[in-house]
Image (cartoon, rainbow, N blue to C red; front, side, top):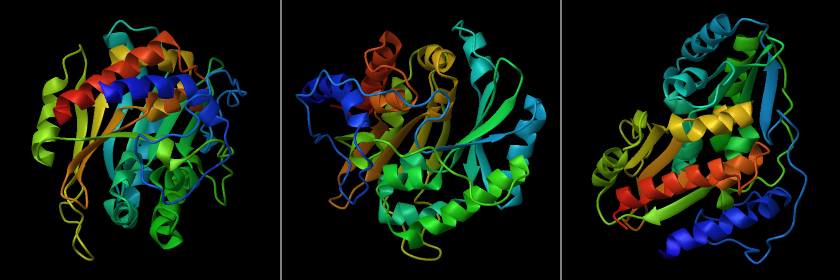
Length: 324
């Protein structure tokens, strides 16, 4: 119960945390957080449609061809499309509030993220890159993705030698998709810090058993594992192999669709991310992105009933998987 009580406190203060300046360092992710007594600060919300750390590029007016261009750009660079999720279709299928055309494509070449994973296994929560295609009420389609600086910041990886392959690959995919070139400016990294990104919990069993426990805990309608990556497999050729590390993408449209309807850019955070890994003390850990932090990034309030509901579901899944 201590973990859940702490999570509830964090969601009350997440808006205050989000207002802080960028804090990028090598501190480990965890439950330690500063300023837990701050409950009344109300900083300005992010600019509408421009979450911190994102890049947005125009893509014309046709959604289907835009999705195909993006998928082709990922595979042209030797990458793999890990998942393509139509958030609008998921909302319709689950009787959730209507969502305008909103599709996230996740993928890239495994090799470009491997140096970051060697620096910090928890970077798996931000890899591979996520690209969101959405259509506004006027019919314009745009491409939004997490800038490499954001991915590095939330991963706690500051070594340019580790992040450069990912940066180069991401820029190439974006340019091929949107027909652009050059450096794309990201929205300011306000309040982005690695220690407030993942919630973590020690598990009582092996990595494989914890992964199985997470799968077994999926009970809600439409709730499913979209992708399960064994990131340690093949990671030692060449270079040092990763300790056991799994990244799972979990779709839960009954919980997430209201948030996408309220803030279309929230589709960039879907499916939900869970990481299970063996740490340097041979202890299995499970981590999942703090829903309160994600909500604040997209201009949603941490005490919004739909945010609280999704956060509680993520807590439940992690607790069931870890056996705590």
